[in-house]
Amino acid sequence: MVQDKKTRSGHIIDNGSPTRGTSDSERPADKSYQGISSARQAESQIIYRAKAGVARLNAAVLAQAAKDLCSSKQESIDKIIEWTSTDMFREVCGITGFDHEETSAKLRNIADMPLRIRRDLVHSLIEAARRV
Image (cartoon, rainbow, N blue to C red; front, side, top):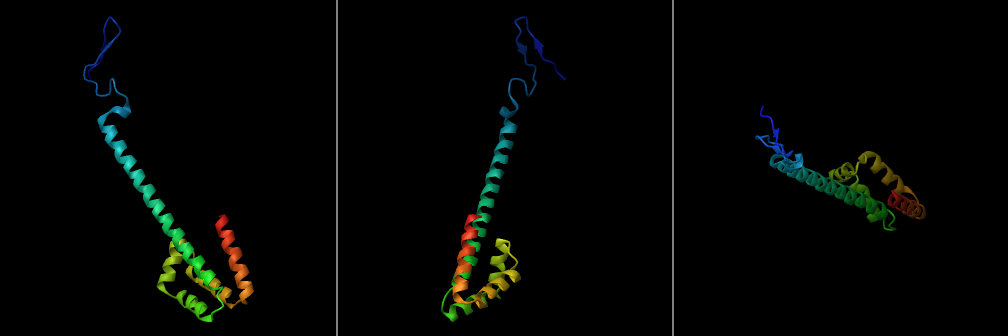
């Protein structure tokens, strides 16, 4: 290994040391690595935000289904209950992290309640979800 020497004036003579005179963050190899690392972090954040956005969107779909159960039209309620047995419903529940069987059962229970109780319950559930 080549050693650096000090001159009489106190300056160091660089004899080829690759890191002498530059900090670790200034070395070209480190700069490109930091660039890749930063790019990966940015990409991870974008993916995380996209997944979070999709989960929020699907949660809004479930909230709208609960609101639709507050309709006075039995036909609208029947459509929601039918939807709970579809693959799309399973996917929506999976993306939001809900168990589709449990969610379906709860929506069916809400649909069986009298209209006034349904409306009060759904309203309070949506308000509670907004506070989370």
